[in-house]
Image (cartoon, rainbow over all chains, first blue to last red; front, side):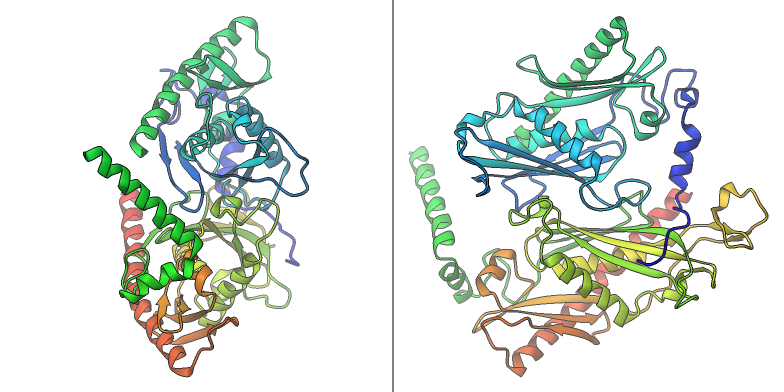
Length: 253
Length: 303
């Protein structure tokens, strides 16, 4: 395209910039959020396995406005260029659709996509029994159809469901939840608007039946008391989410 | 006893699957001999088609198509651009077709599939030659500003006849586009209508006026049969395809026969065109119903 863009027109980006820095508008005096949830309530989740027929296993997840689809291929032959490995490889890739956000993104590997791919790999690595498929690769590919906040935890949850759907042996399902901090308040499973004005965030991925954390990422300021309260909230939410995932798997079998 | 029977069923399934993989063309042949396709439909029928419009809130127009297992999601995003120098009274539409790695075991991330630019170009040609959207509909102010429409079609599940599904999704997404209400100043600056700060003229939001709507039908050629709307399995075995593009009224837009093993005689080409015309009527009904449903949902939301 020869033309340069004068202005990227979007009503939504205007709304986000107005909301930034004013947490008061996001939480009503009665302690409810813009979408009617209480502070420690997760968004309504919809999970479905077998979304992509061409894949060995797949899952679709919808948490509020966040919509993600994950396909799993393999175990299949590793790329020729890779050295011999007596344990299996897990290859993760996350990409965003161009219409995922309010401003049209450039298709292809952005910095965020690379970071998310790496984080997804690290969150799942500990759960998959890699030694059961030596010399081969399992590919986990995620596409974010709509980005509505908490994208990474939704991708992790959905990917672990897709791995189970593909029959890849895991120690346990991995469920993940994010938490946003506003001054003294903690908001579970934040939306995009809320994430844009948060002053700190916490993301927890864990295997609930084994009581093991596979990934924990913190940003912002987290005093000791607040951190332990946040972890407790996240663990509780992960437990409930894992329950939902198990129900979905039982239905699909 | 029941358990024993169940066991033998399982073995039959495994043997069937092995036969399917080891002798794919014989497998297909067994079905065609009986006058059915491996997925159970009659020889001359397309797969069941589901179209839903307006599923992406971030896009100004969107549509999702399921053609059997083949799934396409199309979104149109609008941006304001200065009027093109060579055609000051027109906007632009850019078409991209994406096959992300989730859609098929053959696609790897970071490597572009050969099909992507081919299908994008075919969609673009079909939209241009049917004049489905008059580019003058996308003007904001002649010589000052116009709309740039990015039409992205994503393949979420690839199971054959990709162009057919992608073109349907693309056309429905364009039909769903509603130009937003905006305000423009005398020197050509454009704002959303609700944040006007300077003296500006407001333009009402509107739907695009649509011309003729294109559709495609891919037919796989077997020496004795014509199989419309092939699955990926059938495409892999038969290799020769003819793709007919028409508009909903049945007028021929274009025809592709990219080589292949079976040479197509005139009568085969004509049969394919006849099948496409029949399919056009089916798709027109599905298309109109989906758009009407989206419109009635819109008015219900407005109430």
